[in-house]
Image (spheres, rainbow, N blue to C red):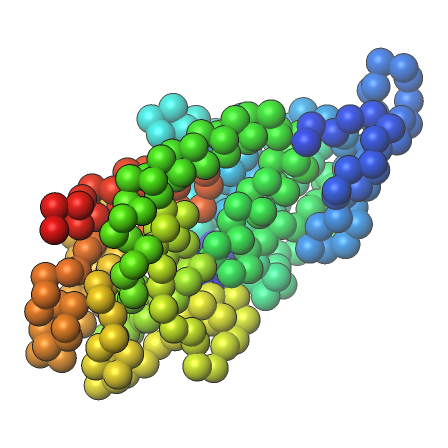
Amino acid sequence: MFIRRSSALVGAVALALVVTGCGSSKDDSDSAGKGRTRVFAADNGKITIPADPKRVVATGYAVPAMIEADASLVGISSWKRGEPLMSKKDLATYKKLPKVAGELAKETNYEAIAEAEPDLIVIGVPAPVLGDIDVKRLESIAPVVAIGPTVPSAWRKLTRKQSDAAGSLKKFDTVQEQYEAKAAKLAKKYKGVLPQLKLGHVGAYGEVAKGTFQREFGNSWGTNIAEDMGAKYYGKVKKPGPGSHAVSEYPSLEELPASLRDADAITYSVQADGSVPKAVRYVMDSKLWKNLPAVKAGKTFPLRYTEAATYGSAMKTLDAIDKSFAPLLKR
């Protein structure tokens, strides 16, 4: 569930004199560009920030995005959930950087952030969680831009905006192009089978204690990257809400047949090591699951790295989905 994931941390290179999609630049000092600023549109308003930040602090979902974009980081929050998704190089960078906040927004260390002497602070938490952070206190240290997640699939725009704020779009654009080329190649590979299937997805954030499971639809965590390969997830949330509630719902286990009986195939989220999460195992151990047409037909597919939220990490997800879907090409 996106809100729960967010609660775990609850949490174009700027060109002179050019108006961009996020703001405009202005020269406040000499011809060398020192002190140049621009106005950047963030979740917390229009903020004047350095046009070329040299010392950036990032928290929450901004952490993997900033590392991947080679931003000039001097401090980050802890982001353990993203470690399995990072490349060896990015993981080494992550481990080396000073941690100025924990996994939760309330674990922000304001003194440590001040000691890092940032010229920009990028907060990557959803708007409802921003209240757990003393933004005014951070603003006394450096300009603060809040750029938080909304629906899961919005990580594409989110990470671009975060990279833009840090003046790191060149590397970002390169990785995006690599991802899109890879996704297009896989879409071509599976075009004869994947788009013809009505897919359903069981996510990892159902609540066993409450007897519920997570049904994810299009644009959700477990589905949005597979969709770039041509996967088609049918249905929609009965009672849409904010954030991930617009693309996933939590029916009781007894509703499993009604929810997924029409699926030609079912995908489900697994951990980075391939193990089945408790909430998904709860579903799969049920007789109701075993009696679903897709399950009887042997058309169930585990998906790893479903929490990917950057183009670099999503390439690992594409590889994992390709490996899982490979049997479709032999039928």
